[in-house]
Image (cartoon, rainbow, N blue to C red; front, side, top):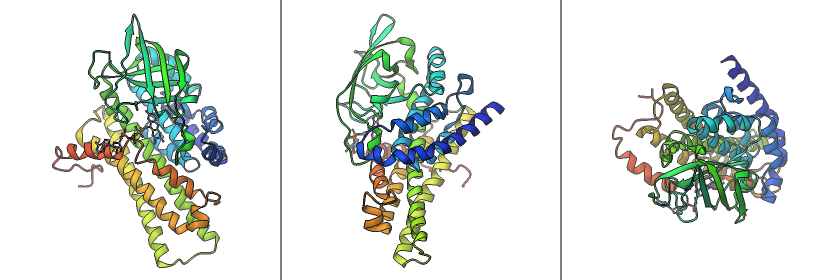
Length: 395
Ligand SMILES: Cc1cc2nc3c(=O)[nH]c(=O)nc-3n(C[C@H](O)[C@H](O)[C@H](O)COP(=O)(O)OP(=O)(O)OC[C@H]3O[C@@H](n4cnc5c(N)ncnc54)[C@H](O)[C@@H]3O)c2cc1C
C-alpha cells in the first residue's frame, strides 16, 4: 500500500511536470493535425502510461479516480494529448481487468515502462460507431487467430505500439458475438487507409487503417465472443469517466483563461450580460464536475465491493455522464467565446485557446454518438421507475 501511495504521488507530480511540454506543442499539433509525439514521449518518460498498471507489474496501481484526476490536469494544456492518454488508459484498464495472466505478464510491464501506447479499434466501416457488434471475424488457424480489420478511426494509430481490436467471434458467429483481441504492432501489417483532417481534436491523428496479421489465442481479452462484459465493466466506465474528465479540464481551463484575461485588463465590474454569461459557464462546469465526482465514486464503490457495473442505474449514470459532460462543457466554452469576443475568443491567434478548445469540444457529442447513448438510456430508464440517483446518499 505504501509503495502504491508513493508511486501515485510521484505520478501526480510527474503529470504536473509534463504540462509545459503539452502546452508548448498544443498549437502546432492542432495546426499540423499531427500526433503530438513530443508530448506523448513526455508522458511515456514520466511513467504515466502505466498509471493504471498494478504495482506488481511495475505500474503506479492507480484506479479510475486517478485517471479522472490526471486526465483533467493534462486537458488544461492540450485536449488532444489528454484524450490520447485517457483512451490509452481505457484500453489498459480492459487488459488489467480481463487480460489472461500470460498476456498481462508480458504486456503490462512494457506499458508501465512507457514502451507501449495502446490504441483502440472498435469503429468499423459497415456498422459505424456501434460498440456491441463487429463484422470482420477472427479466423482460427491452429493456435493462432487471423485478423483482417478495417478501422476507419484509430486515435494515434500510426504511432501505436499495440491495438485492442473488436472482432466477430468467428466467421459463423452472429455479429453481436464480439471478441476483443490484443495485437502487438509487430504482429500486424499496418496500412493507413484514410486521413484525419477534422474541425477539432486534430492532434489525435485518428486516421483510418487496415490491420492484418495473426495473434496467439492467449491474446483474447475477456471470453471469446464475450466483449459485452469487458465493455460494461471496463471499456465504457473507463471511457466515459476519462473522456468527461478531459472535456471538463479543457472547459475549466478556458473559463480560467477568460477570467484571468478580464482581470488583467483591469475588469473588476462587468456588464450584467457578461456577468450572466460567466455565471452560466461556471454553472455548467460545476455541474459536470459534481456529476463526474458522483459517478466516479459510484464506480469506485462497485469495484471495491467487487460488484458489477452492469447494474441498470450505474449504466444509466455512466451514459448520462458522457452526454451531460459533452454537451455542457461545449456549451460553457461556446458562451465564453461570446464573452471573449472576436479578438480574444474567435481568432486563432488569440493568446488564449478559446477557439481551439471550442473546436475540440465539438467532437465530444460525436465521440461515440450521443444519439446512440440517449436512445439506449431512454429505454433503460423504463426499467428504473424509482429513478435511482448517482449520489447514493442524496435521498
Ligand atoms: C476524437 C475522436 C477520436 C476517436 N477515436 C477512435 C478510436 O481510437 N477508435 C475507434 O474505433 N473509434 C474512434 N472514434 C470514433 C467514435 O468512437 C465514434 O464511433 C464515431 O465518431 C461515430 O461515428 P459517426 O458520427 O459516424 O456515428 P455513428 O455512431 O456511426 O452513427 C452514424 C449516424 O447515425 C446516427 N445514429 C446512430 N444511432 C442512432 C440512434 N440509435 N438513434 C438516432 N440516431 C442514431 C448518429 O447520430 C449519426 O448521425 C473517435 C472519434 C473521435 C471524434
